[in-house]
Length: 333
Ligand code: SAM
Ligand code: SF4
Image (cartoon, rainbow, N blue to C red):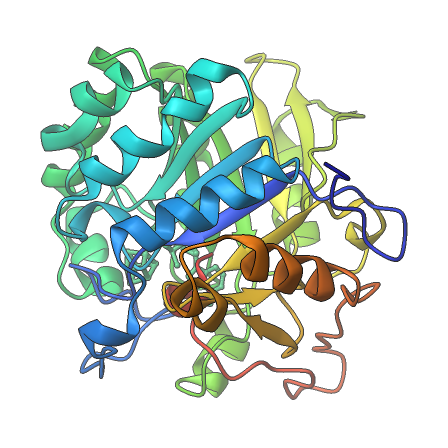
């Protein structure tokens, strides 16, 4: 089978799949408080998600990240994990992982670990319970901390992802770093992205460039750039004093596009070749048109053949140019 290679000679080895648009939180930068969710019939079934992932794995995808919405609120999600985990056992899939808000981890951590999940990314922007309730609208910090503890107890490595928000968690920079050092967790900061149509001005106000965050860190710590790249928008530094690795995800910069090895599929089967572009391919129609995977595979290959070179977010003129109209909860961050 010829592997997936895009027009810029980038092999596509990493797939992110959103399994639901629903969530038990309403983070202000991600969702409106009253979301209109998709009708159930539009969502890919667990069987369709499995066929889709298996087809990508057959085409050379080695790393699969499950996301959402909140992936662990999808009903029967363990059935899906159980099914795709067969590809770990054959060796075709090297890593099966998920991005979660952590609220359901206490319930699922043991099963996920038993199925071969080794790492989870948990999104957590603040360690202050009141601020946590404010930013997630519906979330409770203790539940997430219990989830993280359960994940570690089950043997999962936990990485914390924190969205950097000016005036919100600026004052917690060192608190988050110290907490993660103490807990043996990697930490990655994410620059807030202009997603969706709500709160555009608020987000521009809250935009905290990671170069500023990094400069603040450098006031207290010795930072060494790490060469390590994952093909994604993250760059890493090592903190000399603690030995910790800190990541910076700057999705608005173009500095990672040349090594981009990934594509995303939404919970309705839309394949996005680039997070910052509108172009997509519908995979649900070929999935539903036939029990054979030939049409699906052809649709995937045709889409990869038009994966763009890069994206065009631009904050430079104090307005959001290149803003894409979908929410992160839809595309799967
Ligand atoms: N519910 C899961 C969670 O929160 O981890 C998975 C889906 S969530 C959409 C994935 C990631 O996207 C989270 O780390 C979240 O903080 C991030 N995210 C959501 N909206 C964002 C935005 N506007 N800019 C930057 N990151 C965002
Ligand atoms: Fe839900 Fe994750 Fe979006 Fe927060 S960031 S609303 S937890 S999908």
